[in-house]
Length: 358
Image (cartoon, rainbow, N blue to C red; front, side):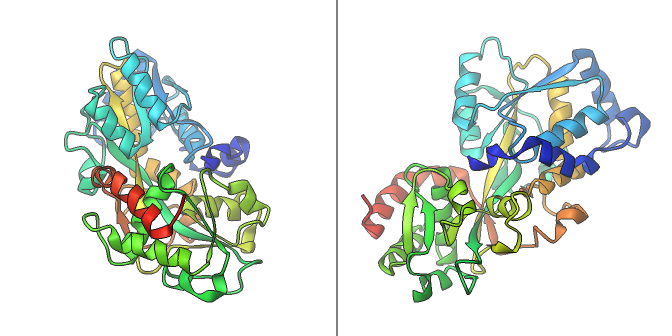
C-alpha cells in the first residue's frame, strides 16, 4: 500500500502534540483498571505487535504515545502485511512470538478460523457495530478506510460529488481505479459503488451495472493492479477512486494542497474495517491487553484520526487538528467482511461481464 511509504519523521513531528504529557502513574486513568493492568504488563516488560509498520495508519505516533504513558513497557513491531501476518501466526502457533496482530479484517477472520487468536474485549468494544467485531473479541476493528474520489483540481474543472456525476461526459478518460479481482481496494470500491447504486450486501448487481455504465461512458482512463499514488502526485490522474486517506495525505502531507479535492460520494460509500487481535498464548498477554486497550480508548482513537484514518468507535471526538479534514459522513456504510468474502467470486465474474475487462 502506498500509504506505507509515509515519511516517518514528518508524521512524528506533526503528531507529537498527541503524546500525553504524563505517565499512567502520574495522571488519571484512561479507563477503570488501567493502572493495575500496567503493573502486570510492567512485569512482562514488552509487547510484540505484528504488522504495525510505523508509516501506516499513524502507528509511529501510537508507539510514541504508548511509550510516553507506559515507559517501562517496550514495544516491538514488524511490517509483514495482512495475509503474511496470518501465515506467521500459524507457523508459530506452538511458540508464538507475537502478542497482537493487525490486519485488514478479512485476514482477521482467517486468523480466527485458524485458531491463532484469543478472545479479548477491549475498552469501547461494545460500541462497535456488530460487523466490526468478532462476538467474543477474537478480532475487532480499530480504524476504517473510506472509499472516496481523489480529484486533481488542476485537471478537473468541476469536482464530481456523486457516483452519478462520474457518468457525465465531461469526465471522459478521467477515472482510474484498482482491479477488484486482485486488490482489496478494488473489492471495497465495488461495494461502495453498489451502495451508491441502491444495492446491499445481498444484492451486488446494481454496483456491477453501475461500473459497466461507467466503462461504457468512456470515462474510465484505466484500471490498475497496484496503487498509483506516485502517478497521482505527478499529475497524471484526473480522478482516482481510492481510500480517503490517500487523498488527505497528498493534500496535507505531500504538498498538493488545494490541487487535491477529497470527496465521499453523496449517495453512499463503504468503510473498510482494519482489525487487531490478541494472539493465542502470546508471550506477554498483559502487555498485549494494555496495548489493545490503549489504541481503543478515545485518546488512542484520536491518534488514528490524526493519521487521516477514521476511528472505529462511534462518537469519538476528533482532535481539533483534523476535525475539519474528516467531516461527518453519515452516508458511509460499514463493510461486512464476512459477507464480502462470500461474494468475491460473484464480484470478480460480474465485474468482467459488466466492464468487458480482460
